Image 1 (cartoon, rainbow, N blue to C red):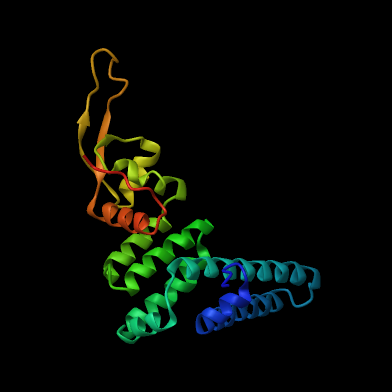
Image 2: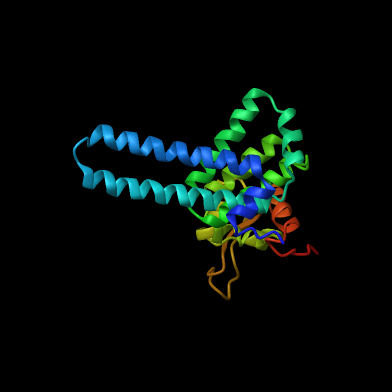
Length: 218
């Protein structure tokens, strides 16, 4: 039985992708090592410390890549078929995304969300433009903010700590202002938000993959 937590199982199911990940990991480690050797040619203690850090970052990258690959749930032939139809510019973007975005992901859960988006892109459910914008939104938000995205399926007064970041990421739009009632002396006043087109698209992707529950709109 395939075990996504077993790196050898992952290597067997995705041989090309894992091989490329290993090459990237080796390249990162080599760059760190050469850079440190050049800057501190006689500081073996410093070199050892930074080398350990480089090895840690490589290990973290492999873990992020594994999370992404399992979440994307794509067969090798599906990825190859998609890549054949990509221009050189698009291929470079995908390579940069796989390396830079995953490598710099500040929350491991984001790698899972990137996998869902990549799945939709490869199978043609969303456009490359959509994918870029959704990835940008996920990259610039906290996962805990994204977990509240479904609460804006219906119009509601926003919580500034959440609604403002979601709006800045292009996932919400303002539709009015509620001044509150006389009885509460305006304590419940605030800006009314709802999901933008991009926000609804991301919500659908997350719900389709079971990451967020479906909120029925009445």
